[in-house]
Length: 266
Image (cartoon, rainbow, N blue to C red; front, top):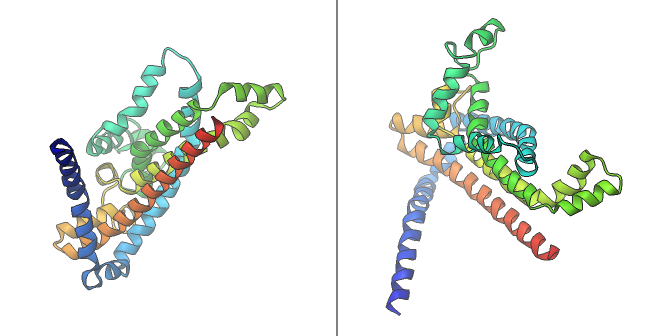
């Protein structure tokens, strides 16, 4: 009995510790209509529009280049597979500031590709392009990992049966693999979008904090806090919290759908 009370008490303490600051943040923003004023701010609206636009582009890029990579990791055998997995996982564990510096040393004016980019008249650092690249670098691996897990769960027998029936490789992928791996793909997409939306460290180092061009919503929180406008920083933070709640709800629904599919299949 005492052990059970201790376990429940520890669980409740951690739950309060995790939920308390977020709940207090939301309540503080709602006091006096602070959230409404933030949404009425041109700076917040511009940053929100930029965040939504860049994360949408980042998501498309992650799907386009991440899905083939996830397929290779799930289905192909190679001596280089372990190294490729390391390359995919590394951005997830790297500090965002390190990621931003690494991108700057590749695409910056004095970076590895700096001369080639300058010769072609393309400037990447401190532009919207840099925001997208930073988001893809830190967020796309989450999609690759989730997509790989979903593809690995697709029975090979079903793929072989589709090929016997005359399906092309693209047909197998489109009509067999994607529908069966859809819950994992969806979970990967929402996690990738959430990571891209909340990206801060790599963005501020590689893209800067230029209002209207590279200032995403997390950078608005930082800028307002640095300027001493705590209420504006709180209100902008709550916008990100609400987005995170929506994303986590989507992930839970996708995973629940995955469990339902598995149980029906069994």
